[in-house]
Amino acid sequence: MSEGLPNKVESPVTEREQRINSVIALIREIAESHESLPFPGIAPEAYAKIKTTEQEFPGYGTSIDDLIKRFETEGMKIVTGKNPRSGNVYVLPAQSNNIETDSISPRQLKIDEATNEKLRELILRII
Image (tube, rainbow, N blue to C red; front, side, top):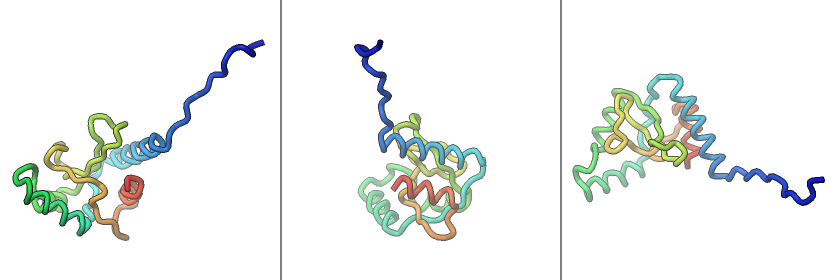
């Protein structure tokens, strides 16, 4: 019969691809609510690193203190880069679309019991 024909083998989905798929699905779920998320704050160690970088490269982007004020006023949203499959995820003030100057990483957010459940899940998947 078909003994001479090779079996069609589907390539397995890698662990990284599975993680990216789950992160993208979670981001879509968060985005579909069309609500800005409450800002949980920035982890102290992340804040210190950002401040050090700002001192080394002044004027490179929006200052972290200005971003924090915007996050507290506007709330925040989670977005992917131009290519969601890249796995790049950004946190922006709710009224911004400027990934270049207004973004921080979800890894930099503080996680506590008051953190939105979906956001906490996303942060933990990314870490």
